[in-house]
Length: 460
Image 1: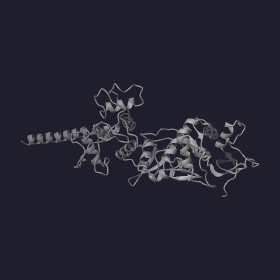
Image 2: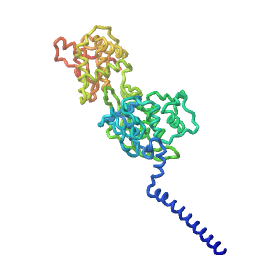
Image 3: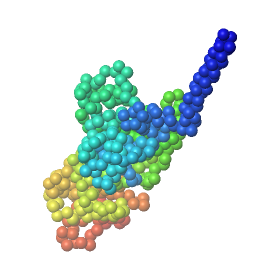
Image 4: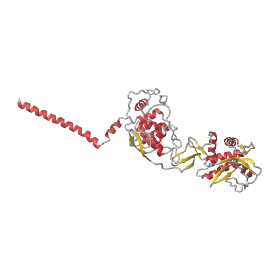
């Protein structure tokens, strides 16, 4: 009996030792796998997302770009296409997936081809479809579904937006995005899932989802970039910079703080610059164009463009400048071309009209429009058109309502300073002499040193 008990105790001891060894053996592969592959937990988390992969959040890489060049535009109000949405998300992938999706309407050489195929291969966009419709505008609902596919879906008892159809394939993703706090809807409490989404809205939405927020203090101080159509006071300014500029950052009590950024490859020269028929002033210290101010006598509007104060006249002047001048011309070559336009345009005919008082300064807008719209006008009309055109290309020109000639006739002309001396520009008077056969008369950049033409300016 004692031997049996002793034998039983021995067996029990062996079983306990076996079970302990087995437990130790089973625990070793898990810890070894973690030591050999520290990314295993992240991969496990990624597998819980509908796309099976997470977007990059630890590096703040740009995922949407402007037009490039010295004076780029971002086109914040342009609607995002399906191809553009795919490209944004593709740039944020940790690595390119195996491409298994093919689409009949996506050429192999298209700039968006790899991105579109990647989204299709991950099941995020166009899964199983024969065509992708890359040029179609993406809706707000589908864009949120695409983003949410890279995050674990959650609801947290959140109520759906009232205007989101529960039967919509986008509905669970929109609900998840709302629960996560990055899909907030509009001020009316609705989400408008079927509306298109603009580039500015897309940047704001995707930044929220990624946990990225532009460091406004850094951006407004360093001015890392600028876009002609993204003024610093726009509601999406910091988000556009966050989305389009490569930068390093640190966490400061839960707030993103930029520490450095990638400098622009192309920087404009200081001063007035003509871009696509519009005049801007680039301030090198701010690394931005000036807006809502005046440089010399030239007013700049909220868009940073020189303006006559009339949208109608601005459109006419821009059309003339684009038509009558060429890329690569110097500013003075442009000035000469515009002077000849006013002097020689056959559609312009002189028409006698009432004159203005000495020193009058409120006739230019109406008289310029009169000549450009009817083709008829007097010296005040011709001078007004040339005055606006010269200013349109950056000259701080002056227009005078004064007197000229031996008879001291009421007359209007333009003057521009060159090397400290004001030169006369009188297209209407030169035109009238040329029509009489006096082609030797040249009143372009004319310096009347001897006052032989007797130009009399108003005092002051």
